Length: 220
Image 1 (cartoon, rainbow, N blue to C red):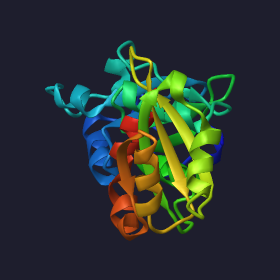
Image 2: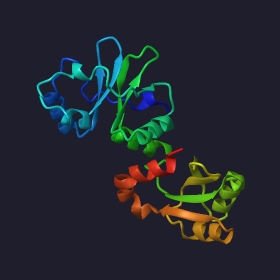
Image 3: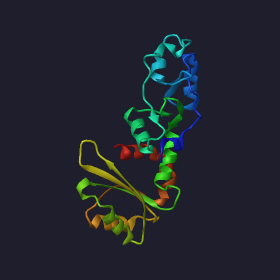
Image 4: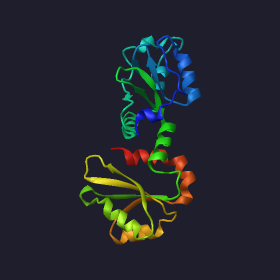
């Protein structure tokens, strides 16, 4: 799945002629801390709420930030995992999506990322999720699948997330069973470290709260 699959046109695109006070009102209305600036030809960068709050005259236009905008964006042909990484690396509330000519296509925020994660991890389907922590050299999806299948379950999806400055990884696995008890017991017998698990009964809270946890697990 690519960034272009999750573009939103909901957030207003700013111009240098917009006033700081107007932009602050938009940020409050749309509940974002960053917004993209476009000069009619190319994407210019992003302005943050923190930048605007430091301005004495809120009637000033954004032209005063012309050389101070945050130059971060992602091209539409990049995978959704890259979007998540940039959002986390720069602590952004959204990221602009551009084409190869720096034309602004739209933005991707938390809501769009959550929708992507629902697709990636089949969260709309019945089942449960568990997270294994292990050394990369010990990782074998075939072995994990064999253990899951020995408990009359099937692996629906799996994702590997590398720890920073370490050979350790998290393996996030979605299975089609609604109870993880027997699967986890078998994994533990094989000395797997269960870092987290989310049964089907947790799915509503899972969907509401999972973004921050996924950011930790997917921060590669």
